[in-house]
Amino acid sequence: MNEILESFQPMFKMLWGALFLVIALKLFFWWWNSPKRKGARGEKLVAGRLRKGLPDEYRILNDIYLPLPDGTTTQIDHIVVSQYGVFVVETKTYSGWIFGDEKSKEWTQSIYRKKSRFQNPMRQNYKHICALADNLGIDKSYFHGVVAFTGDCTFKTEMPDGVVYSRRAAEYILSHNTPMIKPSQLDELASAIAEWQGTLSEKQIDSHVANLQKRHSSVREGDAPLCPYCGGEMLLRKRRGDGKSFYGCKSYPKCRGIINVE
Image 1 (cartoon, rainbow, N blue to C red):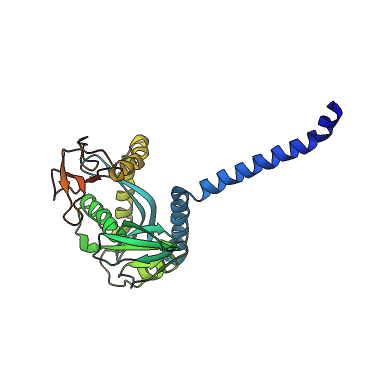
Image 2: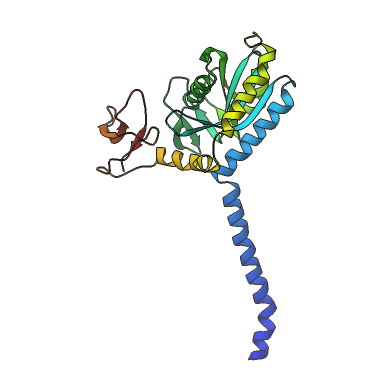
């Protein structure tokens, strides 16, 4: 009997090895295809295309964290400083069909007839522009918002101005040719942005993702959370459209923090 078992040991080892390999591959693909990794790859792709597609006089900053007046932070994927304005670039990595327009609060992604909604990235990017304008002390008219889509996605509605596929991001930026900023000021602006990021501690940067998760997580009715944007008191409200409950910041419309109710 022992001899029979010993004869099967190489096979058992091979099976255990194959099982371990399958588990390791599944874990790797789960990690590789996680939203965080997809987003990181998309940002790296856009950064490379901006670097290759724009002349040397364009100052490019990637993955910038800026402090906000309420003590929180905002993260900007790419900032391009040029004499034709400051371009604030938001990278989105999506697959499937995309439906959306400039004025909608949410856009729709459709994959194999399964639909999901996400925040209008143009509105999200406008908040970044406001943060930069406030920090730099210059008017928002000097800024251009750009949303660059990577991944295997196709727009099924007309793409709003400023929304492009990533391969055309540099081309879109170069299409702006009206001088707005003196060439001698470009390094000053780029340095100011970099210095602001330098004022943030590693703890503040690490907490950025946690703050985002709080902003989009749900709570139970009656929990009365604090606003994830400004830390202020929140009030229980109901949506006009569907009557569903949510917590809205008491400082609305100055602060538009929202937390959904489970």
